[in-house]
Length: 145
Length: 145
Length: 145
Image 1 (cartoon, one colour):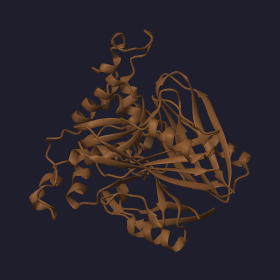
Image 2: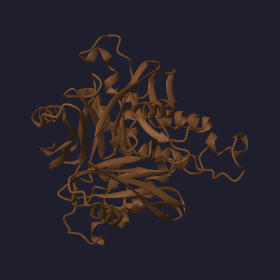
Image 3: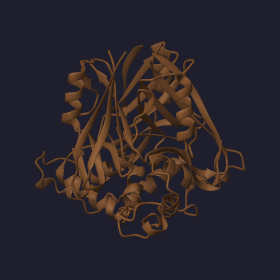
């Protein structure tokens, strides 16, 4: 079994933004030469998440609205009392971003058959930026033969 | 390492329904002949999810009630303005289903030891239909020796 | 490819508690001798979850507060009518714990490169106890070469 470790690096937008990873995933799979196996996609940050859904622009706006209502950025969170924590004074107040990342999850695993990711027609693996803008990395590892 | 790609296909019920995949998973593992390795289970749709929990009928009703309250189907969602999107006019108004799928997640990975899935006594891998009824497919891939 | 199945067993705290699995994960990886591959971490219970986030003590308190508000333990749940179910009379009333486990998810998969788990600086794989205290098990399986 071959193992091909890769990373996707990207610059994200302000606040909550969704980034479709499919073009980079297709490229990484093609470059790997692996035909059958699987791919793991794992977030490398505590305020980003990995989830699979439809990349439709109006739905993306619904995602932002929903997450902002479910976990209000200006709510009362102990993690946001930066002065009371053992951390640099310029830490962002981003407890809501951590909570959203936890709910959305940090990894997905996708089967690879005959050189193609086994996903439905409308499924895109996406990075959910929950506290942007930042430079972010996603671990993409391809396994198989 | 052997890789056995399979699919589970099933017809789902109205609205939100949960479908226990354990009988099909046990069959697929037995047929594969693989004793040690792992199994990946990945949803093939943007309005279904994969999660592991107890298949208890009253809890299943609680799941429906909880998700319906958390993400009301008749809420205001931009994705549901079908006429404003570049899509067929008969698209369903199912933004709530997409949002629930995102939160629940699209894949789980389970270890396989001595021909048995490593899961606790009450754990069932389930397909969460969030916009039924439909015909749905789940990717189940078995890896190992 | 080598496959090393292991378990982490731990005693959890009262109600909702988070347990950082990184020391045990690092040990298991070191003992396995596997340098390149991946690790799957899967909950073995229907009222625990696996998620990756920052183990910061004030954030952990925010997690407890958030989950308790989102899914109140004393809400009305059919699963909590123990007498109406086919189960022992001393079953806990823990529908809220099941619902939280479903949202948080039961597994994560992490790449392993040169003997190190591919995770960001602040990421800890954690067991979320949602109905403690109990003795719990987590399946940790290491694959690779």
